[in-house]
Length: 317
Ligand SMILES: Nc1nc2c(ncn2[C@@H]2O[C@H](COP(=O)(O)OP(=O)(O)OP(=O)(O)O)[C@@H](O)[C@H]2O)c(=O)[nH]1
Ligand SMILES: [Mg+2]
Image (cartoon, rainbow, N blue to C red; front, side):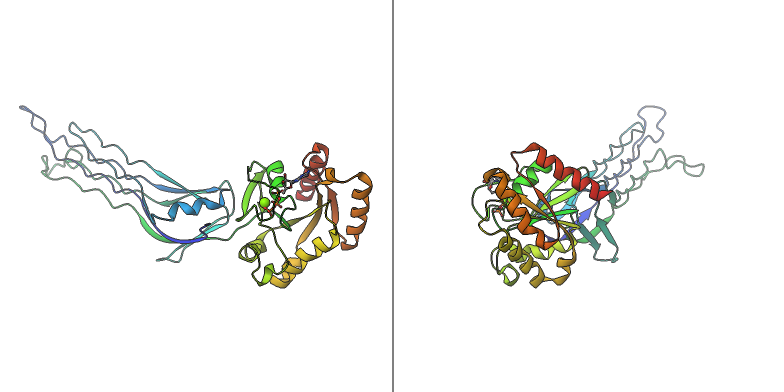
């Protein structure tokens, strides 16, 4: 199960307490060291959409506390920072302040909770008035936040099409993803993301007739694809009726939200190695009536994949 909404608590480390201690022997002066700093919590972005599943059981994450100061003015060790990965498209809301943080960029990293400062030891607390302090500071609390994380799902490219159209296979070819593919419908049950040249490509589970009314798996993810910038609409070349395949998916998108029909889209005629050249040409001709750019592709034909890459790159610029 893909978790796309969860409430969590993040707590940075507490500063370590300062120490009260004294030199042995005749000198006897204070020598207690300062406490170490509490660990910070950072949030970084990942293309792994399932990253929020780390909170399926534990909703609280804490960074390490700073250690107590040592004898002979030795500062305690700092608590280790905690790095938390959130999927691209996550929106975090601080439930107390209302502050919002968006993670729409793979390079983003923020300090979300700051660790507490360590307390001063009795050495550091010396003053002309009190040359031998008998106490030390406790160290400060780490910052704590109660947050709601929501996955908004953003992608530059969205692969759409009927089940078995070759979406996951294309994702694997074009990006760093390594997603299961198989020769039966509904192999992909949840969306997958891959990254290519810093752009995010989404593999969306197959849409079938009736998806907008909840048939198959589509509906659950249709809400996600509103944020995709460009659709790659996959139609397999070995289909008995490419127009119908194409139209079925378009109908479902339109029924769900008419705005989806306005999105930029190219048609990718997949699995071209399964039919002869004549048939490829004839199917391209047939699909022309939809007035979209059409690209024939086979995962077994490197040149065709390269052409698709070049087209996407040209589209970026
Ligand atoms: N010959 C050939 N087979 C392909 C090509 N692309 C995909 N396939 C095969 O077609 C089958 C379906 O591919 P998938 O990538 O799993 O299709 P999908 O659209 O992700 O399917 P769902 O996840 O079920 O919606 C797999 O057996 C792939 O190996 C291609 O270009 N040529
Ligand atoms: Mg798939």
